[in-house]
Image 1: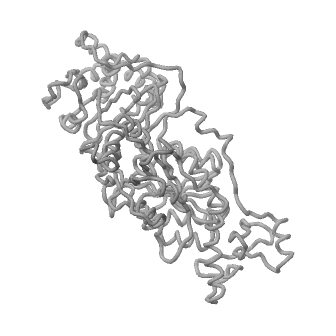
Image 2 (image 1 turned 90 degrees about the vertical axis):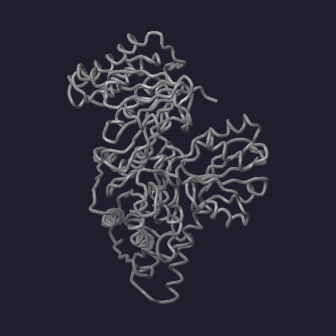
Image 3 (image 1 turned 180 degrees about the vertical axis):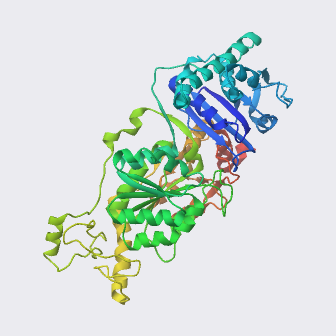
Length: 584
């Protein structure tokens, strides 16, 4: 198991919890430490409990665990919410001068720091959280200079005085702890390394992947937790000749993206479950008109408005089957923050290679989690762009040698027609959401209908033959116990393997990023004695799909309370499923 340190700050929404946590995460990252973050925030602008948790180590960390070593508590509820994770030796930083009287667990070290008063001395009460960061540095023997660059990045645009005041506030917090708690020795060791890491979350990785893939148009409507994709692209995609448009709603967003894609731009929109519902009709038009488009669904708890700021993987059925009629599609689900980048690139290639809409499916846990990576994880030189069967004027002329007019919906052997962008000489054509013939003219001819439906579906079959719809494998390849999962559960499950190994439970773990088409897991399931499917929803939607594939009943571990899986918790659930006698 990795030696890690777990820190958190909690308070009310609007108290600057997120920005404070990110500053500390950046400081740890710049000190050459790995970082993995988790957020708990209410669905409101102000009020309601919110927290930012950081797990850090000199080794890679991929999950949160049920342990807190240092808690910055701005409210009593922060302490109450985290009682189960505090342990003998945990430290709690709080402000005893505030109106609330902190009730601390007996086995924790209470560190009373006048956060607000010290912040006012440094230049303003708004810096109370920065004072707490300085106090945390002193308690963990973490060099406060590591905060300086993070503070400069966060407040540099506000002027040198603001940056200087924040640095002073941090040092006042550190000095206070050193003076008032000189003998408090906590068993925390935040070693620094010379490693260089980048820190980003899943939404940012999707945005970065879109730019690297050549996306030049994005339209979207703000919705948690997909909004950060648009925020990342805004101001960046313009540097590459692209545009971001904030639409008036999700209907407009996908139709704008469709129009840009028809014009030849690599185009994308991103939303969450309610937006996917609204986009379903146009999704069918995208497929029928054979337009390449990437639609990103960053899932959250549903149905209806549900819990907008909580974790869930409940949209799988919608992405696999949503829409009236039979709509060919691809569904790709990144399993890590890094994969959010690479699968976004792949999604754009698939869309244009097969002239088919692609659902890029992430979830809240991936979207908001900041994680550290080596810069070469995102090697731009390794990005390959395949625009499929786009034809130029010369190729159109060759195509016309065999027929009188360009046929944008030609019934080819692989189902993929030549694609002429607007302005291509002799490539003028029409497309419609009505059933059409090879020229794009609407028709109700029964034979043509059969030909066009078969042609569109044949693209998926062609993709099955050409592409590698594979999985990522971890653990013991010869284990009798098989765990299968998808999406953001990978990190927690990979770390859960260590906990299970300590109990003598061997597990083979398959993490599946391709949901449609997907790998055939029949042999893997047949070779195992116990098979468990892990996912964050109530019904076991992926388990249902796999059961139809392998014709076998599979066990399930489901979580749908709005909170992501934790590694130690998941190990308990897996152990109970595959070795109930040992657990008893």
